Length: 196
Image (cartoon, rainbow, N blue to C red; front, side, top):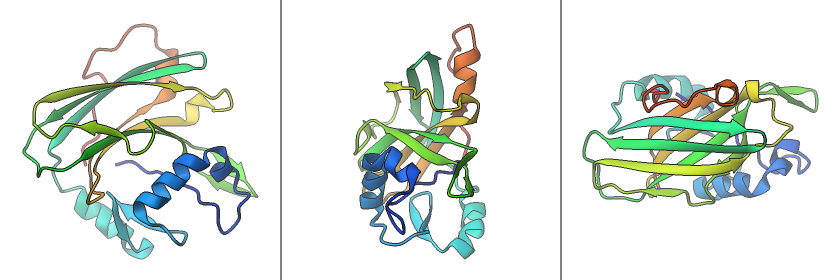
């Protein structure tokens, strides 16, 4: 399971996390049709905040038709990740899009504390097309590492989402601080996807 908080430009247009990356924030707002905050989605489906815990518990029992394995590296301000997608079950024909999302924890603004705050989303909207023809597919993406990030508090996610229904069919995560400190290349499978 992954958590992401996208910040909007209301109720206050001076939200520093919105201003840090308004393009990615607005792309996600448009995708979901968000017109109020807080607005809660579980695996791409809008839910009432009061019922989100039950929805999450139910979704944890839904098997995913895909496995994801992540790898990557950070050197200074340059980062890259690679993802291996393997379809393990058939899926309806659709546009499945992958997104690499970086979130940061332990942030503060306006006297409040924030976790899972979206910093960047790669690639540009509408994401990387994952062919739905079965088999294995690979994606490599470079990204800029902002020196203000505290890498020990930064997490990288990959989500795969049905672009039409918005359903998230699989996700994977890795602590980016581990990418910065390791010496040897990791092989596929040393970082394994978190199952739904």
